[in-house]
Image (cartoon, rainbow, N blue to C red; front, top):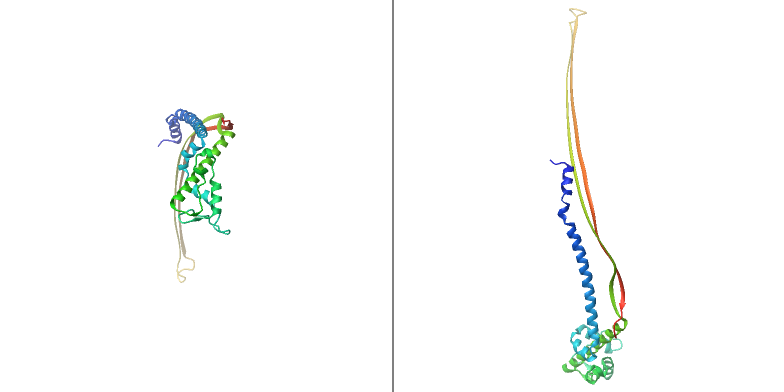
Length: 263
């Protein structure tokens, strides 16, 4: 049976199998690739923003109006249409058969209005009083999409004025750390004990009858004792340890700033 020292040394000798240099090289490479990829994504976002604001309002609306979700349309209508009753809590529904009053038309067209450069018919004021059919509902929903797209265009232009937020690596420290520990222990113990005891004892007494002799008597005593004791205790302990610590850590300090964009 190998002892603890032999086992510990054997395991410690396998340190080269871990491939620590390869691990460190990959750590550095992956960190570098992550930083480059992050910078490329920021650059792509910058390019997309510049391309978006370079379009005219009409072009931007035509390119993005179909990307407006149904939830956004409903939220816009709920905010634009006045409630059916002063104490009503649920938002109005724009559906076939619904009747729009003059107050509804005024509020809805005011919210939908777009400047002339947007290229929308009647400046995007498409709501009319009376009962709604499917064609009127579709026209209002399309106008809402154009209005939301125009709002996004205004937001992007405001972002350009403020500048784009960048994430910049100012300083970086790469540390590589690996913990490798080996430990061996051997323990042997033997206990043995014997105990033996033998005892023999005999006692005899006698005397003659009183009519024959007044003084005749006899007695016999026999004792025998034997004790054997054997005790054995053996303990063998072999404890050894081997510890190698190679530390690994990636620490990168970041700094943010604003990059001015051309208006």
